[in-house]
Each structure stands twice: as C-alpha cells, then as structure tokens.
Length: 117
Image 1 (cartoon, rainbow, N blue to C red):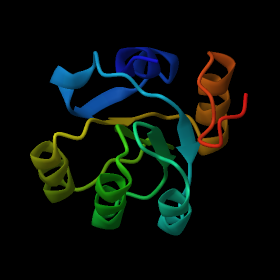
Image 2: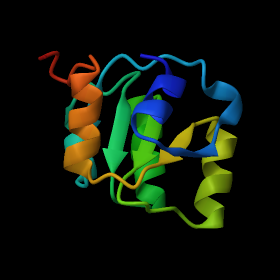
Image 3: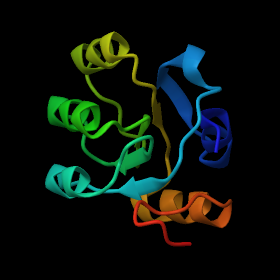
C-alpha cells in the first residue's frame, strides 16, 4: 500500500516526508510498547502509535519501519520532527484512535505484521 493511500484512508496530516508519499508499506501494526515493535517483523511496515517520544523514532529506525502514524491527533515536538527528517522517515497524524485507524487500514487490504489478514 502506498503512503499516500494510508494518508487518505486515515484522513491524516503529513508531519514529515511529504516527498516520500509514493513509498510503499508492506504491513502494519499498532503499539505503544516499543518492545513489541522490536519483537515483530516491522521492516517496511507502518507503525501506528500514541507515543510521540524520541524512543519511537529510535525504535522505528532500528526495526526498519517505513512510516509512523500518530493516532488521536497527537503531534511530536519540533526536535522529534527534525530528527525524523534527518532519518528520512515519513510521519503522519490522524484523529482516529489506534483501534479505528488499524481497522480502516485492515479493511482496505493492509495485512498485519504477523502476515495475517
């Protein structure tokens, strides 16, 4: 699924990576515990989370996450946005909850990190 499709499905706002909207996401998952992200096969995935800390970016970088979507309208501080830009990591924010955002992506064909439909 293309990042611009995720943006449209989630009615999201682009925070970083406007030039990466043509990028592809292979799967998706939602977590607020970064240990869960590190134990999942997250390479090339979208991470939906309510956390806006630097730890989220560091975890995403290590795990090879392709896109971060902040749920419930959350937006990280300026230094987090700048760090994401330096990592060339696109980030979006959506008003939807983690549950609803995950469901909308699933209903539109995005599979889970475990490969299930």
